[in-house]
Length: 93
Image 1: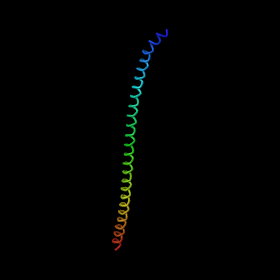
Image 2: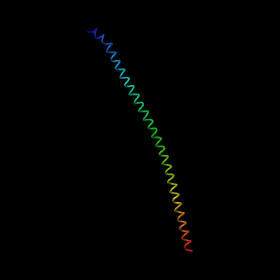
Image 3: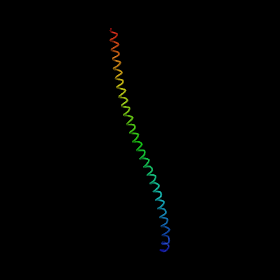
Image 4: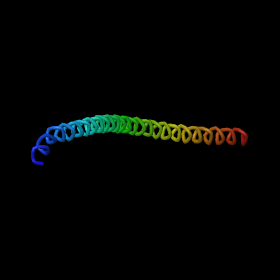
């Protein structure tokens, strides 16, 4: 009985080793997939940060344009008031 067990031991070791290699291969595949997913996530994070910076710059530009438009509107209203006063003054004469 012991002799037959010793004869089977190498065969069992080969089967265990072979299944261990398949498991290692699967683990390696999963690791590569996880590394690829992490790389994609990092790239997406960088793209999102760049988009955020671009949006902040666009907002600053829009705020500046709004301030300039408001100033131009105030200047136009002041000019209209001056013209109205001048017109009324000329009508009084």
